[in-house]
Image 1: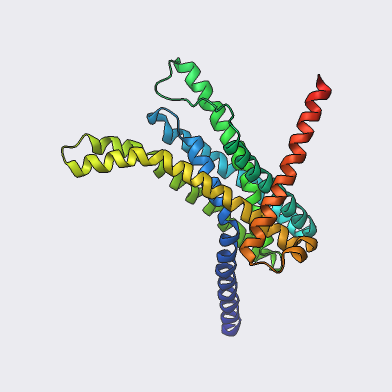
Image 2: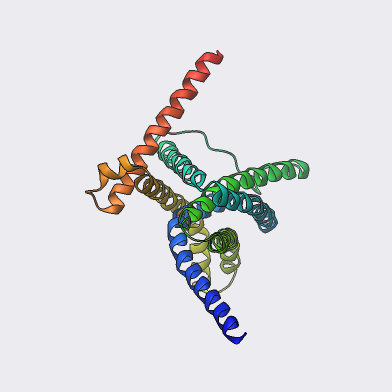
Length: 288
């Protein structure tokens, strides 16, 4: 009886050790998406009346948890019964990531109209503010769903060879990290300007300096996260292409890993972007 208990404890210890190791690997693989998730949500959670930023962020966070509750069971079922689907979805997700990165680069280079944010300076009624707030929260939750699918599939792709128990523990841990970690950091980012405003009201010159610095730094941080997130998307997509498409791996195998992944992601993104852009132009012409 005692030997059976010790054997069980040994199995649990081995499982947890495996979970820790694979969680580190999965976190590295999903770091790019987490960075983009952080940048996207920081941008979407800002621009509200300051008193509404945290309630709005909490509403998005609850929506993110609901997204994970929907995505995780479906992902585990697919992994258990039809594991090849995970690889297919992984490649499709990489195509989307590469396209998203290429689209961001295009929008940065080519001028385009920017969406109007809900700000304190806008002369809107309470009902209009509520309507715009709900619309923005809904859009943020939809975006979170897409990013959550990518995070879960990429994390699952790193543990496909492991037991279903390890898969569930590792991917669930990454999913929780994606929600709690990302939205926790977003909450700190969007309140930076409020902390800065409080500090500027103090008599201390140092406090005023730090306060002004925080206020001026906030938009730069959001832009910086967006830039880093775009590069990360290219690398993550390229890594998936290189490791799951033999032809791409063969062409780029002589290059340093990070260079090959960047080229694969960038070229793949440009090609997909051109196809989508061309399809939109054709569709627009046909509709006329």
